[in-house]
Image 1 (spheres, rainbow, N blue to C red):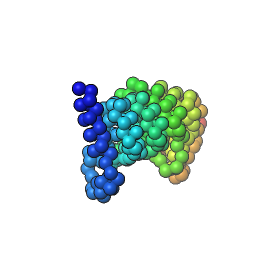
Image 2 (cartoon, rainbow, N blue to C red; image 1 turned 120 degrees about the vertical axis):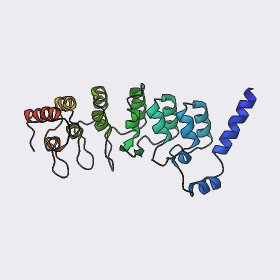
Image 3 (cartoon, helix red, strand yellow; image 1 turned 90 degrees about the horizontal axis):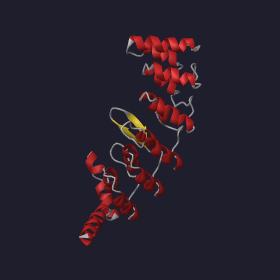
Image 4 (cartoon, rainbow, N blue to C red; image 1 turned 135 degrees about the vertical axis):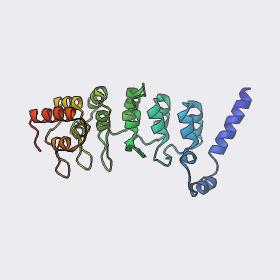
Length: 239
């Protein structure tokens, strides 16, 4: 029985990792999302460490992306498959790759790990940081890990990231900070938490906006807006 299983696995791997000529020919054709997902991604999704290692051994592209920019490492991070995360990192997977979803925009590997349903998120985050993931990413990006934690209204994630080197006043290229994200989301608990941790209430975006001015513009609960505005003014915020 074991011989038959091994034979079947070898056939799957051979088909999955065919000649480069075939791969190039396939890549030249328009692909659906499902067609763009590699055998490595599928094995990662199933938490099949054995097949993942076999595919890596057979030179599978650990940084291949699906139609939305997702990678096998993102899948492993999001699902909390810690052993596969470490195996992919050891094989050269990019810990700072970016993907995208239609409704959410760009996300990083670290943010994928911070999926609320992932019970192993902190262990995965530590493995990613040890593997070179940037807590304060530079370059062309929108959201960053601390911003994502604020959007999730998770004080636990905020504390964990700050303890691991996240800058409470980090900005993206547009000048947005995590505190501004809290303002836009009309999240009094996050505003209070970040101010208490040293967030600059008068930081400005590249367009000159402050967290206070953003809070006053955004639509949402009037009660939450009033509380957020009160917290900013109490902390000396200016428009």
